[in-house]
Image 1 (cartoon, helix red, strand yellow):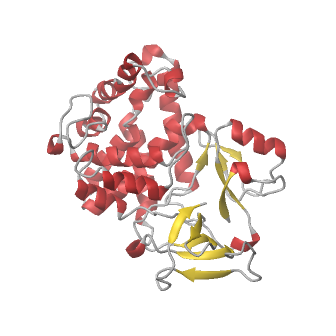
Image 2 (tube, helix red, strand yellow):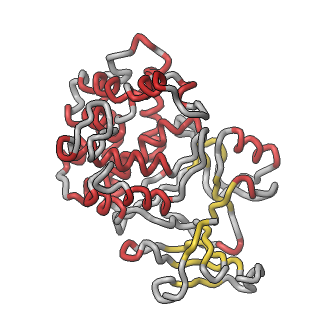
Image 3 (cartoon, helix red, strand yellow):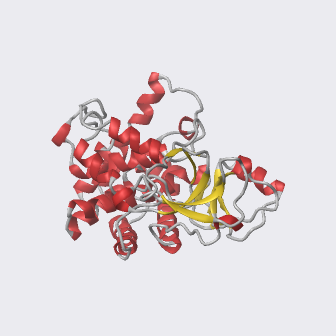
Length: 360
């Protein structure tokens, strides 16, 4: 299979991976043949990339960090919680789920079980979802990313649980932000920005009142926009004044937000997001924590199409944690623009004269 831009998809192409609704249910299933109407509808829903079946890349299968069933359960819980918070103003200051901590402890437990059964602690997030489901899926992705960094940090089970629940619920205060502001295509006014930034306080106030949610988990909501140099909000604290859980969630939040398509901008590639994080080391984030994070992120996820310095086009078929920038590629187009008569792979770990110059 291959990851492609929806704008380049022709009618008759078949989906290789499902597309999900905001509640975790499937919008379009794998194997669905895409008509012009479906392609137009995907664009209207804000979906810019999909996975399609492709003869040249047969056998290439991205390894999702968590199972579809785990993501569905998490999305259902997030959808239930946030929908009530959005639709019922009287719910302000109280939980939509009486046993919030227990519910999300179970959700994060499933996430960690999936992560810990992998051969390596290496993240590839390939789920495709609509703009409307961003708030739900973003929190799930942040929890996956944060959990993996917690494992790399050597956190014990209780610490991982506190971090994971905080990561799942860190953006719950966004339910208090008017939807037009979240989807505004242009820059925010000073007053609008103040409303958006207050989501950290709103989220903390809600979570700290829950009897089964740790205060440290609640601080993920409160502090995830604080920055290492003190330039963040809401309090402008810096360095170790920011709890380590919130520092981890802050990095995961920025990475996943950058690599998602939003109504007001195009997505960044994982390699561009990693470059941004390194550039922000010891300014926005602790550089050592950024290094640890990036060591567990796939720079070129499996099924990504890239161009080599030779002009050849290839699709990533396998990654290696010890050489994240030098994957194995399936060549699908030669430098002269022709397709190879027989698809073949190139291992960039041994072909040192070859380098990836960009994603296509």
